Image (cartoon, rainbow over all chains, first blue to last red; front, top):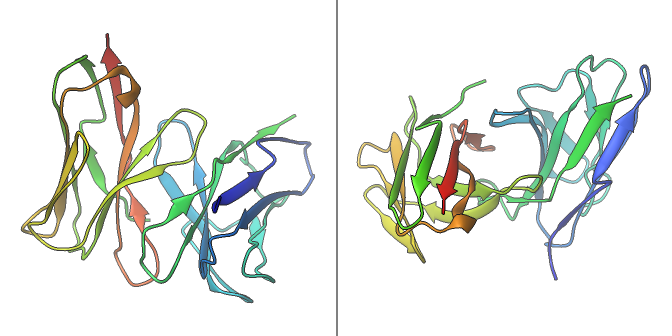
Length: 112
Length: 110
């Protein structure tokens, strides 16, 4: 079945460590997005990519980095510069600009 | 960044009751989306609206695109326990991304 796969489901980070969250889609979608969700809050956009080898910062990009080397993949790295990384991270994709986004099941990141 | 205002923030209802929630924006939108999120999972698209005044149903769910294009409404009829979750609205302030509301948390009492 087509869909978006995020891994791992749970991730723990040590102080000063970079961690990478995986997002893969087999929907043949051009656009991909990363959101952060904190308890009791909505979704905040971290980065988005409309096409391979191109991406733009969202509203809260500081302390994060991404790459888009393949259409199917859009990994997110949470760097040590992100001082409050504990959150639920959601990846989404859409077929074209402003088509509805479809989400993965998320990765919950915690600090050890 | 800009966010959408959803109301109510949370609600407890009895099983079988109807539910209404709304979403407002300071900007005009050409599209409104409604999602539901279950605990520990990603949001799932419920309804997409593309035209002012449009009324669209998906089972017991009905959503409307407000005439002013600055608001949208979601109704759930005859609620059941599995309706529990967080309902988000979303709209595009520009041409490349959506913004999401803060969510309405629904709890259904059996």
